[in-house]
Picture: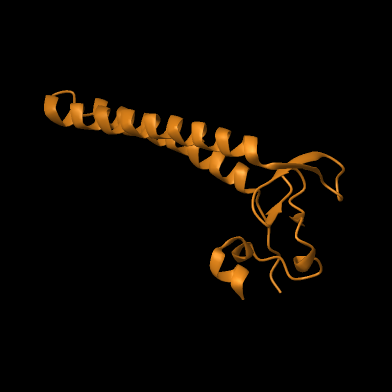
Length: 120
């Protein structure tokens, strides 16, 4: 069986938002390569700016989602973490976590958070 590293949903979304910022800057720098072609440079600058604005939207969304997350103490590392959904992973030690008594002892599967998996 392969060694699977679980990731916290909140950290995964924050990493995505941070990568959008860097991607936006890279797109804008590519635009500077086309200084002689004004319209093409403008397109790259606008695309880069849109990526950074979208990153801000994602950061705002995950911040609002984080306020509704259940704060718990990880039983493995004894550090505070937040949990989204039925199953999640600790933000610090990547320990799989659940608050659902019916899932205790079962193999960790992120699909337990989807509505299809809940019914079965």
